[in-house]
Image: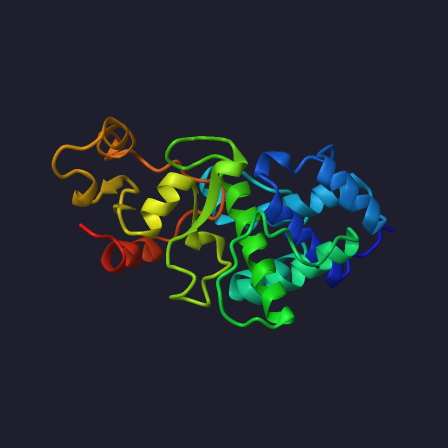
Length: 252
């Protein structure tokens, strides 16, 4: 008889699902092999569980991708728990993952910019876990590529919040509130100099197009206006979040 999956194991499995691009859910993926070994399971069983989660993913369903048909009620409950409270579940899953892998619970400061505020250690670690989960999930969803330039160098990529961190606590770790952008476009998006229309095409602020502009600015902004956003395999940008960005952050 197959070993029953515990809620704690499902929590870790969902974290792994969010860390990996859809095309990397194979049992031969190194992360799946390492996590399965730590869990005392086979890579095949963990891979199948991740594919079960994929069967609930509407973005994948819209692309005609189907997960395995054996998803359980417990799998659905875990999927729903994340979507109902990304902040709580991302924090729990990051802790569980780090404990399983025997990693330091505090991610590297080199990869994470922590908003200023509460200096207490517990609060700081929670913020870092939120940031780490959000980055991992958004970059994995876009397969480590900028959604505009297709640059595929992780060190140059950011997980950009559509509704800013400071504006909506509820959306801080929600991957549908994120877009993978390179550092230049991330800063422009954050400062309201670019946005996307209802067809997910790039809109450039007049501030970037007015007067005589440097060639670099012309090539990287004005010349690409109207470019369609390259959609992720999952967790596509929330249209309501993008509407908020156009109305409250973008400088026309």
